Length: 152
Image 1 (cartoon, rainbow, N blue to C red):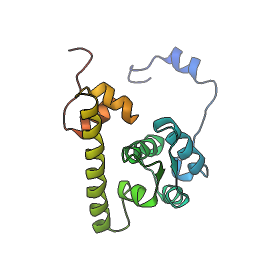
Image 2 (cartoon, rainbow, N blue to C red):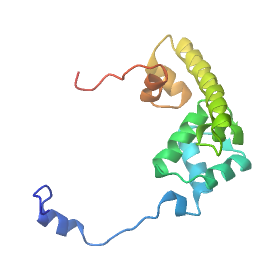
Image 3 (spheres, helix red, strand yellow):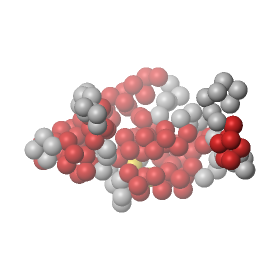
């Protein structure tokens, strides 16, 4: 407000009540939250108990968005029950070597699944994304292309 970038009258209109949300790492409901987010990104897919435990131990500096992205990437494997190995490969591990190997294997699985979806969709990225249950931007990132912008 002092710098003139936010209107004082709007601030006071919005500042009726303060809502404080704890960081994800401080919450005790990561498991049900992960199950809910996984149902959104990959309906019918679930987490093994060990995978849910691995998620509950992670610090999540990116909060809920990081959790959702990890689950979306795990769903690209096509597994109906996501195991701890898949989750561990997507999260920073305690040691660097297993993480690098796990990331490589997971990237290969994801790449094969995306390639198959693109073949089945005749190269149509929108149809492939719908078939995989992910956004078009996820496909664009996976194939190393920049998504088209709405403006041009």
